[in-house]
Image (cartoon, rainbow, N blue to C red; front, side, top):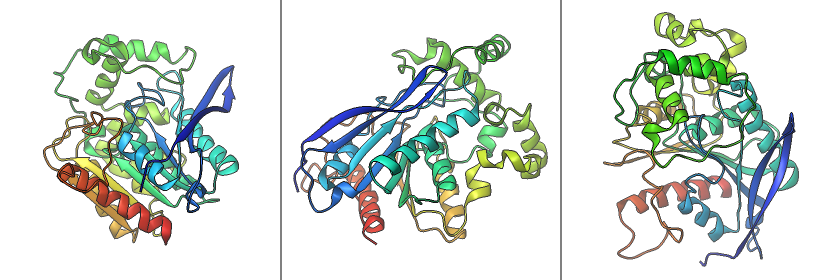
Amino acid sequence: MVLLEYRANSHVFKTVEGLELTLDVHSPEVTQDGGSQVALIHFHGGFFFLGQKSTFPPYWLINVCRRRSWTYVTPSYRLLPEATGQEMLSDAVDAFNWVSSNISQKIIVAGSSAGGYLAFHVASQASSPRPMAVLSVYGMNNLTDDRYTRGTTVMGIPEIPAIQFIADIEAAKTEQALSGYDFPLNPSTDKRFLWATIVHQQALFPELLTGIPNLGKQIKGSGMDAIPAEARKFFSVPFKIEASFPPTALVHGSSDRAVNIDQSTAVAGILKVSGVKVHLEVVEGKDHGFDAGFSEDIDVEEDGPKADSVLAQLKSVVAFLDDTVGS
């Protein structure tokens, strides 16, 4: 099977207070075997503070789409802290709705890192159409986990003083929202990356997403009961997973220093107990973003000596998606 020639077009799917939110649509010049009926939406990562729709393109996944004549879509969304968690989530859902109205109702929802969280949210909210499958690649899937309610370091960065950075985050909430931010060449000196680091260390993700002060600490002290009913939509995994949830594939490096592997292994367990069809691939020895270094022509389905163990595991994920789309 060859990689089809693709064309890329950008579309505005939403305008908010003068800010255009766009998505890039990569579609085949010539379709085959009905593949164009399937669209795969991929949400970028960046801890909700960084990144844009072109950040670290998952070439292996893009080429999977090209092999099948699937349409590949990558949307922008408003970033924290200038935007609220509700605004960010509504952007993800609105991107899905645009795709279902303008491209296809046969949709796979995918995301990497923070994008995995968005993929889970969209899958928990969308019912007409219901996504065909979910793919989370080293995703921040469950923000009620200890990592996000007790605090943690990230990427090996030592703990840093929080007071001034927290004040800066609060001040930024009054500024114009951003639909993207170039991932910094030197993250340890970048303001927004340091904001994300502080939010990890101080367990502020639940608070920032919901707007409820000290929610992370409340969850730590009182468990899930600390989360009000109206805020449970922000936590798809503990509250929105049931047997009707779409079949889900999870991929995670065993040595991930940014998003602990429990974010996939524990979530796989929750999905299985709930009766959801799930496929988990733990990539031994790999850190966060292990696929970011793949070349643009990477082909995980290639046979022969180049098909190493990592590519074989990704190929297994692709087989799961094929089975789900074909069933």
